[in-house]
Amino acid sequence: MKISGVIITYNEARNIARCLESLQDVCDEILVLDSFSSDTTEQICQSFGVRFEQNTFEGHIQQKNEALQRASHPWVLSLDADEALSPELRSSILALKKEGPHKGGFTFNRLTNYCGKWIHHSGWYPDTKLRLVTKADAQWGGINPHDQLQTSNELPIQHLNGDLLHYSYYTKADHFKQIAYFSEIASKELYERRVRSSLPKIVMKVLAQFIKTYFVKLGFLDGVAGWHIAIRSAYATQQKYQLLRKLWQNG
Image (cartoon, rainbow, N blue to C red; front, side):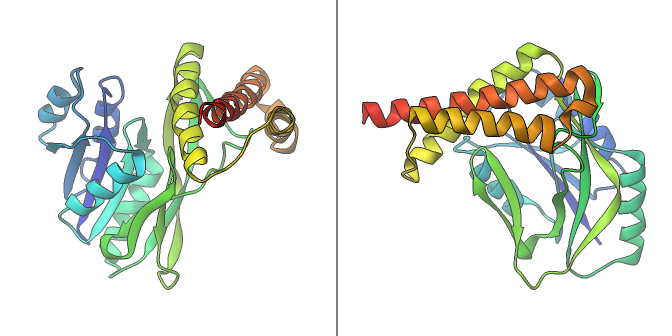
């Protein structure tokens, strides 16, 4: 069971070393597909001796499919630069390699660290992800920037023990920067799909997002961090649909 670990990057000097360290001894090759970073991402990757290649970024889905196709081995383990395998998940994958399945897909839970706190509610956990698949049976789909690894219906899917550790935001400023970035991408995707926006719709979407995150998904159990996540998730929804409304107004 030969595994290619694949990661897409752009200015990920803060995160990439932790990600690469977690993949060592698990993957038979590690491929980093970079979007011409201007920081030290390339130098850090070279110090780990990984395959470092570059490709113009046209969207998260497009870039991840390009990385998938460039992988050398039949199995692909896909991570984001701000993710890392927990020790338990590493052990699960290593045990799986000894069994040597011929094809399939494997999911695991993702545990997110938000400004120094691990979040176990708020709709952020277990956040099960399909990330280990046979290359020939999978491709990335979804709606940018929310990509999703998809497989044929016949492919057997199993769940592995252990968490995929996600180091999402270090500060409040990081979160708002990401909201601005993702809101712009998401609004354009919705516009291309001819989805409409209006003031009443924005109000309803924002309220629904807050209620879902804080009450339905038990965000209040995450303490102050849960409150911040709920408020900022509602704000992100507002930004996305306001930008969409402007796109329609500007034609």
